[in-house]
Image 1 (cartoon, one colour):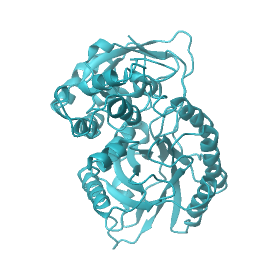
Image 2: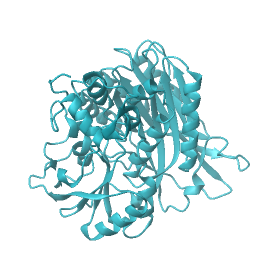
Image 3: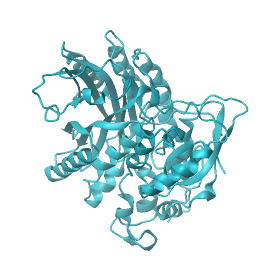
Image 4: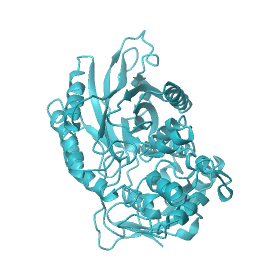
Length: 498
């Protein structure tokens, strides 16, 4: 085992490059915005206000399609996808929102931004189609060097004949949102990252579909939305029908159990992009909430408490670093039983991403203590610091007590095998790469803290107060992010780990 310290950057993922790409991408996406967009930079999803929903028997429906293309370059593919989305416009159905997913073995920030710029140029022309979210992913050892996977997710609003069963047509009946005073749709798109490599190596890929579905539900939960529809994309080197059938069956079951319509599922065989045997999964979600009840962190003030909900392991982030530390540096095997983990290494790494919606949505449906939830942060790539910064107003900062919870054994094992520093702002250490056992953070007024924690405990989870909000004397402005994607850069010390 090497004594040299390992970091996320050394494992092949350049977080800073991703952040730089997101800064430029935000400029492009804003050019496509319309008056219906309610999103501000840095949120975990993009929100759009719906037009007036017609009452029965007239029915307004939402459909979704994933769009991929083949081409000699990612620029050519992006142009084909954008033009294909434009061509789908019709008198009865008009594109309402677009999201993109860009994945590459090693990220070139300028080229990633240029690809979104191609989308922006097409969608900013009238009638505009807002680019409401997206994700830029670095996938070493999955995609060929220099290869780019480009996927578009298009949501369209239209009408359906009264006799048509919209569920069978893979559509969402928007009249079901009639109870919301001002219906708003919240969108997000993301992927499971190199967790796919662990699933493929262990022969357990079906769980990857619930992983990305739960991840997506948690993203839109940060604005108080419940999921109503989902689209799943699977890219692969070659079609392994048994593998793909298990993924599809798991996606269908997970959508049903969470009350969502599986709007589209696209499987694309691309041997010129993927390394032999490799796959990638990404998904686009749409959720619903009333405009006046969107959670955006605006009311967070000094004195508010930070309540952490435990994660179920790594969830869907940090796997490039984890694999490097455990498998390469540590020489461990996925089927090896590890005493401190209480099972095999593969089992620990493939623990499903936890879905927090069942515990949190009932709180949001109440007047109190639901109204006490001032902010929700999904702790994904970038760890506690980057993701909490996404929801904090510019006049406050957060202090987190690291002694308020014990990171699960899997994180301690990763750190030992890779000799990874706990914190490394440049190279990205443990706390900058992993959730470290906290998968969701709630910002709650102190007088409601006990009530909120009691309700969450009743749902079988063990929340813990991990810190508090304090004043930020310099009033430094926070950073932004691609809506539904990775965090963008933010000032140092907005979140203090004590």
